[in-house]
Amino acid sequence: FQLSEDVVNRMKESPQSKRDNQRSPRSSSGTAPSSPAAEGKLRSPTGTVSPSNDSGQKSSAAEQELYRRYEQEQALVQEELLRLAKREREAAGEALNTALQQERNNTKEERQRAAQLVSTSM
Image 1 (cartoon, rainbow, N blue to C red):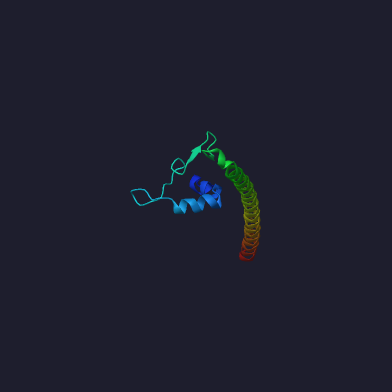
Image 2 (image 1 turned 90 degrees about the vertical axis):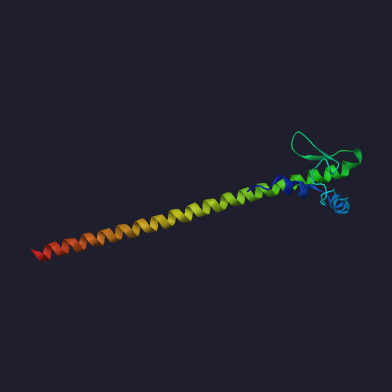
């Protein structure tokens, strides 16, 4: 399970920058700018978004904290998915074992009936 880059970027935005984006002027197409460059941010080589000015130190720290929390949540989600997959495999294995045992019992009963039919017909 992985979120799109747009969702991650929106999660990283501080509440102040969200308010600023709501008040930002619309482009000629009638939509607000959506690229990081249009929002006054630069994309770093690691793929994270960082403010383009020094006054963004607090915002950058908040973004880093949000991203750290996001990564922790992702790790928890991955762990939960692994636990669920393990439980599903175990349940499927139990269902298969039950079906196999039932089939063995049915086969055994058929053999016994066939043996009885053979012995009574002679």
